[in-house]
Image 1 (cartoon, rainbow, N blue to C red):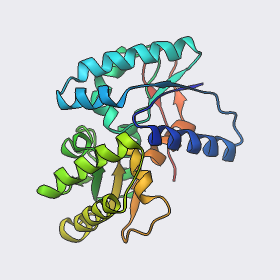
Image 2: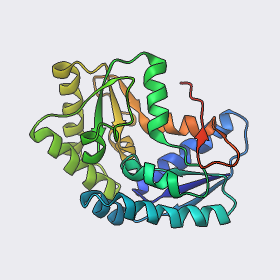
Image 3: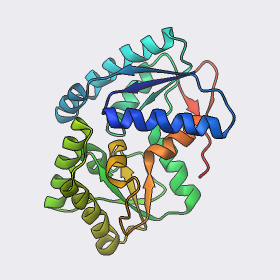
Image 4: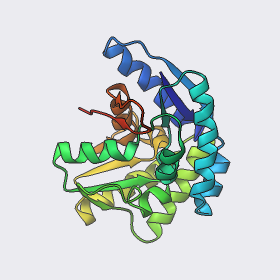
Length: 234
């Protein structure tokens, strides 16, 4: 029984839900899922003020509700929401399936040496919260970094994508590949599915949300612990 913290943002929640249904159906497994809603404005404010402990306590309340609803594990359907994942893992009464661990495994499994990140500024600036050691991380440079961050927040908040925003993300990815040597661009913001799904961007892309979803659908929880094991294969 999966408990999902959703709402950050709405498009990301729908993407996780739709693809979890697809993954479980493909594996001929029954999906049990409960979703609670988190406020994107709270997350953005706490990221801005670096209040990881405050956000972790908000997530704690949600994981407690999910546990009461019968959830065995909890998932944050937001990459930026993982800025407080260490604090949250220490508090959560049920195991947390961590996207950073899933990506670390995937980079190593594919033999990637250098990857570019697109997403919220906190994910890019921290190079995924210091949790990646299997590959070198590069991010947009200069004003392009701020532009990607600003447009990503706007898109995630509204759940809508405009042509100009898509062009900004595509150009940033292209620049990381051509100027910084990135082998692949990792969509380190779940709402980027709005920009990239069904579009030809001109470079290789890895959707971190799909990597996470694959880890969730293949996870095995350790008993009597707030950690979770997972296996990924793409």
